Image (cartoon, rainbow, N blue to C red; front, side, top):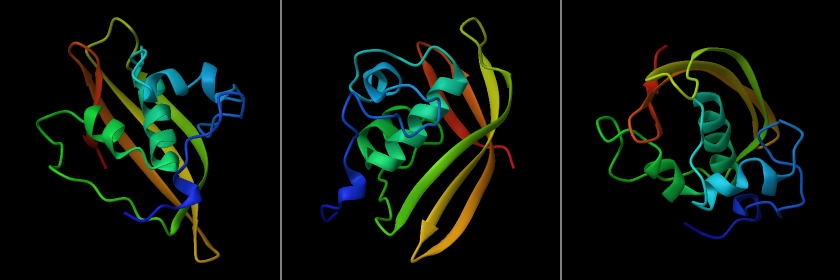
Length: 135
């Protein structure tokens, strides 16, 4: 995949792309760097969105459940992810075994705006993992 500035991780002091308002180094940064595991399904979903904005394929694959994970993943550099809105979450807390997160991710491609709305399923074994879209 050719280098693209949109696929650079934010600096630790920059605002995290996931929309919490926190600095990347205090929000999704530790998850993407492998220093911590997301404690909830919502935090995993937010960190996966951030991984899409940063082009972090390794993190996306590592946080995908083995039963549904693709062998490879290519990200489209033409997609510029703009914002994330968590619509609702069911279960997915630190003591739950599964959870569902509905979100809207807004993007732009060639100047055209779009939105991806998805209800994602997550499971927790040793850590939270994305399973699939329930839609």
